[in-house]
Image 1 (tube, helix red, strand yellow):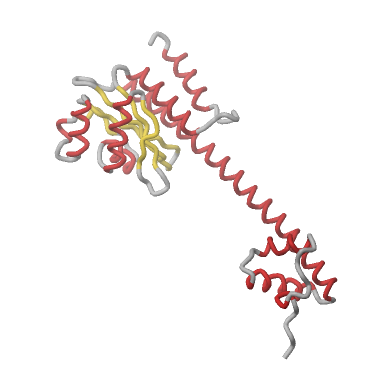
Image 2 (tube, rainbow, N blue to C red; image 1 turned 45 degrees about the vertical axis):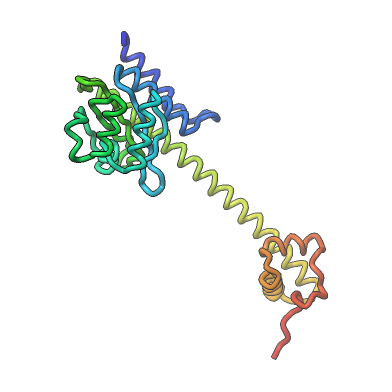
Length: 246
């Protein structure tokens, strides 16, 4: 790599471009895997992302066999990536042979895939770790300190981008839920007014009628409110009649 500063700047821009409408998490993890494969050649790179229960899932990789090994580790819950994720600390230049006692299934799968040295870096932002980067090398391969530092910077940049997008999506969902709740409240208030005027009762009593009707007919309150506004709720239905006073 002739110009690492330029390469790093370009990679950072790609990973940090969360404002574009086309940004998605899968594209970000693919970009991370391919960029790190360029930096750490001849090693192969896989990215594992944690799900809501904290289990790692293979998200992207620079090669098919790296993706297969990452998927194997995620499904079996053992290996350098799992250890890195749980501790939020790097695992560097571990010999696959030496890991047999700790991770027997992973070590066997890694050897079968042709890997001899494994490393893993956390994808984190402050105290939150969202996944790991696995670096899978041939016999004699070592990740040096400069490469480790650059790789960690990119892993953290990707984590920031992904977390930012998750926050934006959650905010959008919350805003939509609030809008829906407000719209529903307005419709229910309109329906209360219609029933109150039609039956000559107080709004609170009208609301109780609507709620009782919805419960007896196994319908949602908003559905009954909309039907009332459209004039589809029969006033002579016994379910809509006010309760008799004792």
